[in-house]
Image (cartoon, rainbow, N blue to C red):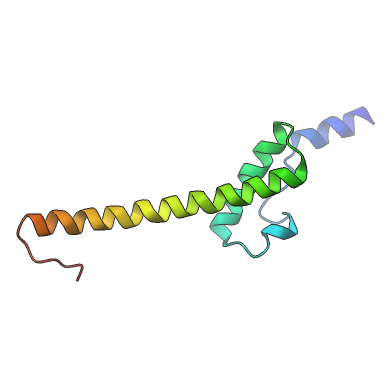
Length: 91
């Protein structure tokens, strides 16, 4: 019995095919990040419910930050072009 328990600890509880129901409606990229975060929290001893809540919120913030960074990169190129006196290709 002890061997089976040790084997269970080595595997992650969630993956892209098996994840909590509360992650079902997340965008696939957000879900993957949430699964990664939740598994890490579980390894640190955080309870399952708390890990799920934290992981979903953190994954959404991670995605929002990535989208903002992409938008800022586009905006920066636009601003550099305008400062250089060129016509913007973004408008």
